[in-house]
Length: 312
Image (cartoon, rainbow, N blue to C red; front, side, top):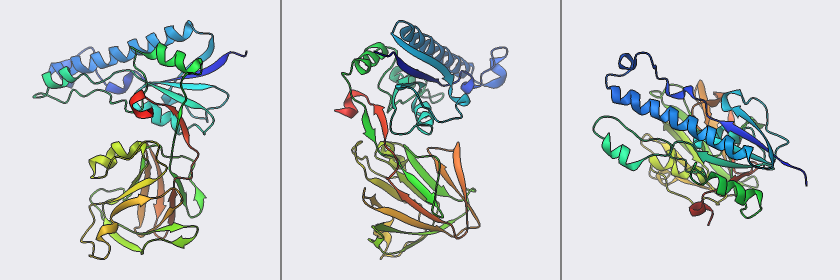
C-alpha cells in the first residue's frame, strides 16, 4: 500500500506581535505581554508535538506556514491545520472537494484564565469550533482517520458570481457585501430564485450591508448579528441584511431568511464602490455600481474531520 501524503499547514509564530526586549513599552499592563508570550509558546509547543507524532507514523508529510500557501492544494491525502478556525478557513480557500482537512486547535481557550483576567483584558484564546483535535487527542484522531474509522463530513460552501463570473474563492463560513467605509450606507437589491423563477419579491435595501453564511458559519458572525444556528450539515444558506434603514412593512420580514439548497440569491449593487469579503477581512473582491451578484450553495463541498459533538 502506498504511503499516505499529508500537508501540515501551520499558523505562523508572529501573529501576537510581542517584543521580548521591552514588553512594558508595548503594553501598559505587563500581564498582557506575558499572556501573549504564553500563547506563542503554547502554539509552538503544539506544532512541535504534532510534528513528532507525524514522524512516528508511516506517512509522508510536509510542513508549510499558511502565509506561504499560494497555490491550490493537490496530491495529498489529508491536510492537517495547526492553529485555529482561521487556519482551517485559509486552507479551505485552496482546497476542492477531493481532500479532507483535519484541524488541530493549538491554543484552546481556558475558562479559568478568562475568569482570572476578566477585569483586565479579554483572555479568550482560540475557539476552534471546526477543529477535531488538540494536542491531547491529536494522535488518536489522526489514527482514527488513517485507519478508516472516522469519515469526514461534507460541509457546504458559498459560490459567488459577479457579472456571471465565478469568484475563485469559496466561502466556508460566510460572505459580507458592504461599502468599504463602515459609516457609508450600502445600497443594493436582491431576490430569491429557483431555476430562473423568482421566489420572492424584489427587495430594495439601504443598510450596512448583506451577510450570507453557511451552516458551518451560522455560529460565527451571523449568530452575533442576530442570526440563528443551523444544523452543520445543512445545505441551505442563511442571509441577514445588516442594520436596514426603515424597511417597509411589506419587506420587513425579508430582511433575514434562508436560501435553500435549490435556490440562489440574485443581488444588484447600487453604490459607486463595494467589497465582497470572504470568510473575514483578508480575502475580498471589488464591486461597482450596477454589478450583479449571484449567491448559492453550489460550490464544491469541503470534507472536514469534525469534532464528535458536531459529526454525531
